[in-house]
Image (cartoon, rainbow, N blue to C red; front, side, top):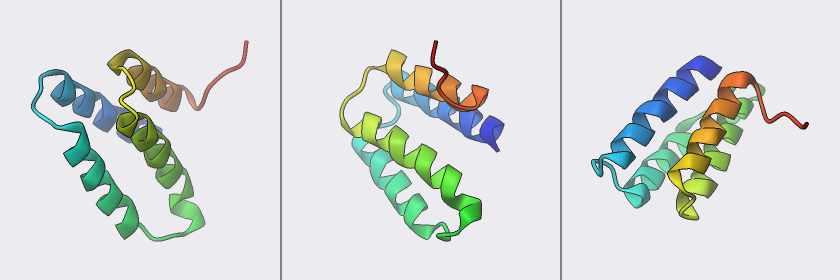
Length: 81
């Protein structure tokens, strides 16, 4: 599942970087997507990842920070050094 999320995020970041996707419209899309997911334990992780990512997307977080979040998803979460 993490690999699929990360691949989707990588594609989205590429589209944002090229100016092909507007952040506000993307946020609206993901809000609708998350609202359609069943509220079960099986979808909890996915809903949390998308919600956290949307928060950064809405706040205007720089692309480099959004990409860092994407790689945290791939590696299974943020590590503390």
